[in-house]
Image (cartoon, rainbow, N blue to C red; front, side):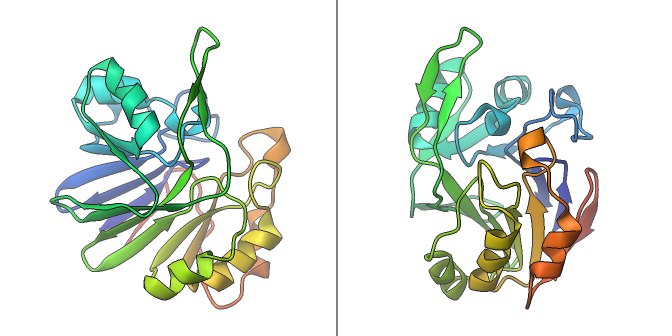
Amino acid sequence: MKISYHGHSVVKIMTGGKTILFDPFIDGNKLCDLNSSKEKPDMILLTHAHNDHVGDTVDIAKENDCTVVAPVELANYLGTFGFETIGMNLGGAKEFDFGTVKYTKAFHSSSYTTEDGDVIYGGMPAGILFKAEGKTIYHAGDTDLFGDMELIGKRNDIDIAFLPIGDFFTMGPEDAAYAAELLKAKTVVPIHYNTFPPIKQDPEKFKELVKGSEVKVMKAGDQFEI
């Protein structure tokens, strides 16, 4: 399994001959190294409806005829653009040919703003547990710290946790470090920081706060295999 990070909350996983793209905010993301017109994912996974997470989903999905998995209200809206969507909800899991996707709770908000300024209700925000090749990846999405992260950690042997550290809109470095302690992930990767002025953070300071987990501070385009 090959995992790469591409700025903000964009994560790409290649496994079983498939490419899965999380929260593809690419165009307009100054920290992203990707070109949306060149991405050819087999599936897009969305944590919630905010524009900096839905990003370029519509154009990529239409161009590649790929499936989009999202919280059900967001999936229903995106389905009006003519590509396949699968709407899921918190606690729900689905097996695919490459592995399993399960939605977990996240504490945040979730709405999509159209080019015309209309605001679309996006359902509940979520985190995602992604399981393939005997490994478990947790993408927390945008969230505050919450106690049930301990349950998520106890019930899942998490190999890698992608955690937001930006503060202001999500938990900050101190709370994210405590989240890492609750989750007991083998490796933690900080995400959702430095894209906009309000979420400016030093990931190295976050790294110093984390105890019991390896911290990988990744730049856009960095990748590793597990």
